[in-house]
Length: 139
Image (cartoon, rainbow, N blue to C red; front, side, top):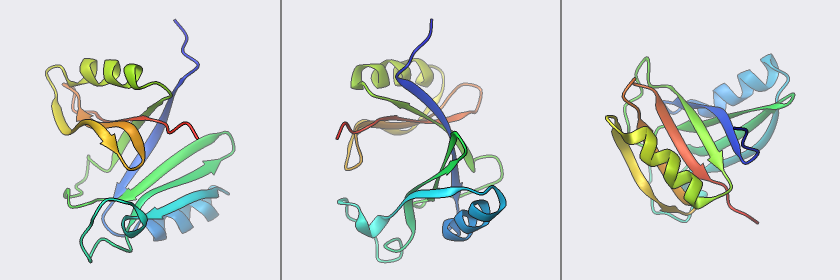
């Protein structure tokens, strides 16, 4: 079965140095910065300490994407810095993927509407792999 509406993208979680990483990968991989959004620019409230940190950034490297953010309080440790972002265009598909991945795993952020998505969740599956599952806004 082939799905045209699902994308898998590496998502790097960093500990306050996302802007430095973006510059590094921009130069090292000849990447193009598509977007950088700080926690302060989002509609959701955040602490003063997080305001200037990166909530979400996306780089384009040839035909591939790479996503980043500074951790919003979750300790960054070796092993949990990389997640796989699963993007869909359909809330029901996002729910289906979330339900399947959370079985015998751990829900890190429940499936809910956010300022950046009609349905977003973060789950670590039973194999210890972390997934961010997001429905893309249809603008």
